[in-house]
Length: 285
Length: 250
Image (tube, rainbow over all chains, first blue to last red; front, side, top):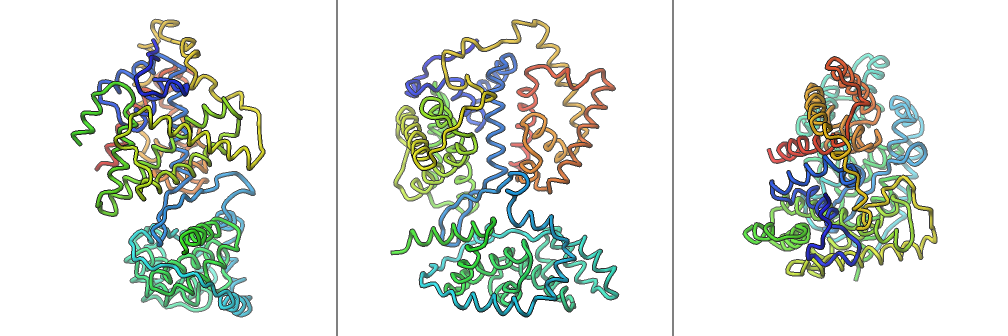
């Protein structure tokens, strides 16, 4: 039943079987149709072989789900690992999003904005890093960004609290949620808001512009908002987006300062920033 | 492409040739989107290969957790990808034997480095398939064809009914259901999968509805989930993988 004979590949000495090679070929769609059908037919009649292949498929899909191969603005490749462990090992931004009422953070934001904004900017200014991020315009920078969470639920809460809610703001956030970033940025630029909702508008507008690689505008919009003491994921993602935009627009020193701040934070964005800094340090002359 | 077609006529594994093709393509002047696609395919293939070599080496040298093997495989794959892009590693033109020996050595070194650094040795998981790489065990493979002559017909009937029931699900729901039922992926893993991209809570809701729908549909046709015969996975994979490839190509 099993055709586990050496196939001249030279790997038999290492204990790998022909079936294993065939399963790898099948998984990666490398078999001609006839051989594929023959293997699948054999697999359907052989529980062990099927179990092996099933495990291979499972590992493959888990890998696709939990790790991302990404290219940094420097042109370097990194693998981002998305932590899927339960409870305490969640990515910081995911955990925070679940633990914190999104309407609630707006209130806290309002209360502590002045103090933390000052301290955040002071810390950013204090951390001047001498290493310079080589500027390299690349469309891949957009792939490094993460969309912000949808905001409809929070708007429902806000609409109950606020008498006036600009329809453009609602439509802009909805467009963002639908990943229509062009429409989102157009509407959010027209929208009128104040107080905490103005910060929301700026964050989503900045993110929508970044998704379209409008880096100069991103720096303008997020320049102040991203350094405010926002809860995660909004805060860390906004700072990450701003760092990418700064690098893309040639503001390397400011980008480095921000990355250093991010790298000191726990969570997935911190790891992202650290990976970027590590990569550049390896490249430094 | 002609070389690739020629390679496919050779006996033995195809993946060493594909590996060589992909590495050679990396150094061509490709459009960014195509370059990303080649990188992605190469990285996934390297991961698959290194995981298999690591599993084998871990049994021979030191048993380590699957999660640690995944970390090693991911890092080593990335290293090889970088080296290939920089022209420091080029498997094209090498024989399959040379490539497999090289990858086995990479896996072995990765494993030894890990053991030295972590000093963490655990007992192998008894639920892991112990027969994967050993030729001796192949002869012990169980053939359910021989044990039950009618099983093939029953399986085909069952799979046909199951496919019909699953076809009533929306594409994403069917994918979620398949990932959980056949690949045993967690809700969080499914949620993060690029073909799903949902929140875990949403995955749970979809999964519950999908299971109910499939169970009810199967029951109406006289089947229960416990009836699922061996061979169901490979039959379904054949169909859905083809659908998935078609979807991605369009």
